[in-house]
Image: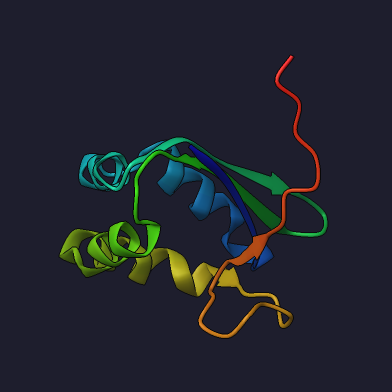
Amino acid sequence: MERMAMVIGIKPEHIPEYKRLHANTWPEILDGITASNIRNYSIYLREPENLLFGYWEYHGEDFEADAAKMAADPKTQAWWAICMPMQSPLGTRKEGEWWAMMEEVFHHDG
């Protein structure tokens, strides 16, 4: 299992709609996340900085392949077409990233 975290900005005028969408996430999106070997997926919002923090645990063998399969799904593409214009990617993200991936610097299983 690999813990993964990421961050992205969100345009403040879209926060209410983003919350509404994610409170009623389409079942096909949830199924796609599960089929991509992602578990314990959470998104947190930090205001007034307007940052979204995402966390999940990847339980597969090939994240790139699972991510590519999810990205090719038409329902996922439709979901992203709604959500992506609400987001504001960090200027410091790596090439090819939308959400900026984060480095884990501490973890404790107590």
